[in-house]
Amino acid sequence: MSDHVNREEASFPEDLEHLADEDLEEAVLDRILDVGEIDTGNLHIQCQNGVVSVEGVLPSAEQYQDLIGLLRDELQLEHVIDRVRVQDEIVFGDDDDVCE
Image (tube, rainbow, N blue to C red; front, side):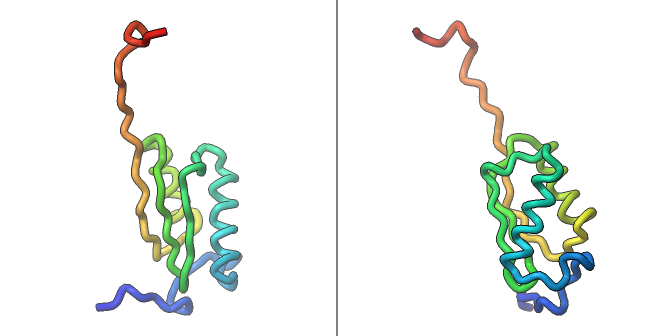
């Protein structure tokens, strides 16, 4: 079974349907930026043949859920490759441990 998806088979909202891959990448990023609550500094979005791939690191599970909800629910993207990780919050000690 192949993971390949024809662009004609991919389902997009009407305003994204006829965009070239590069334009679709830009449109998806614009929508993410419009939300304003998702840190895009460590995200990379790529579209190829109607498949949107998102990879990178987000600082919280909440931002991850917002991102996936936006892609699947609002943008109605059916073919999303999710390679996003949530950054682990690691505490190395308190301020008393810092040497000045």
